[in-house]
Image (cartoon, rainbow, N blue to C red):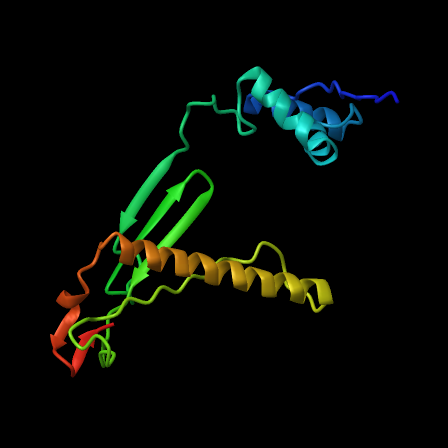
Length: 178
């Protein structure tokens, strides 16, 4: 038996300056061909492994950063007015908002001296909802993933002892912060 291995050799559209991209876009409008961003998107979709391999070979990331360059990061606090505490963190194009809400509740019978922590996680939809069977199945799977992440975050908080649950007790056996 003989096996054949096929390797694609595709050009890698490197990130260009805004003036070069603008010129490319103007050329494509005048019938001068497709701009570099369009070509890169097609190559990424058709040949994803080769697309990323070429980026590694050239020592750049797909967004133009060098391998050891970090994304731009910003954090702000007290961003959600209806929360008792909140923050927003942005890392590159990813934004995470966190709000803390406290309310008085009844302690559990098993832990009358401890308050409780609940983690609720919501993720923005990536596409518009539809009524197809596939969309419903994907939404169900997303809910399961979201639930799994929330449980993992809660376990991390509890196992790292980030919060002393006994400090959330207002009156033993009667009221706690939840």
